[in-house]
Length: 345
Image (tube, rainbow, N blue to C red):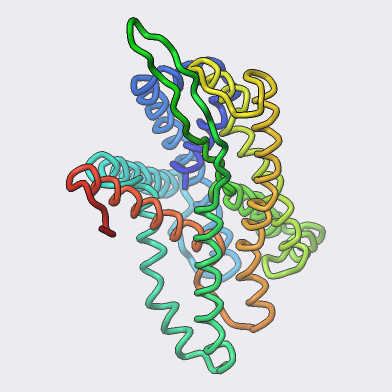
């Protein structure tokens, strides 16, 4: 989690800090610098998060009257913080090795593996559930949810782009036509992570602050309550618009099209093109935001309605399906590059 948080922070800072934006435009050399900054920030976040975990362990020990830490001294705390930080750095190193030598993003594949490893336990809990209606309906709901997620994840609006013919020396170049794909869910799973992180603060405050108002506030925003579902859904919608606006710049896209002689049929190059792309993106983001909010809230709603325990949340489902689709695309690209044919001949 510290590495993912550091990556998100650096990605957002590239829009705000001019020096980072300049590094992003420098290509591979600039990307290596940004990756180095991400590593440094990961170590710092892991260190402070480890300190927070130590105090959280102490809180659990005080509530359960069980000694988790033998002596809350500086040496004990330092050893625990050092071990947790070193473990985070080791996982980050493993993820980067997988990225360099394998297929796909290493950190995403490691998270994917940790989620998939819980499938046997989840299947056992489903099979031993005494509720027969739940046992019958659960596979149908799972297939429907997976199909809907794949459909939305792969959904895109293709904006036609025409390139004007240019004379380069004695040859005529350009004149082709292509399209600019705008995905329905351009933000991915990041808004769900943002919203879940913010909604985790009230229960944490209720655990650390031993007062009446803090406990009442934590109980009001109980993860299984209606207020939590509504608040998380609203935060997901807001963060989806925010993250999409950060990652996709219509003005930059319009300038790139104009620079290379491209234009959208029926739309003037430059500012009108940027306004057109911004308007299309705003319309696409709304159903994508509703889709993310629905997927994140669905497990909690099913738990409240069936009183059955689910071992997979909305974030886990999105990560598993997203990583699986990306990995399949990269495998398909590798096969096409080497054998000139994919999985389907």
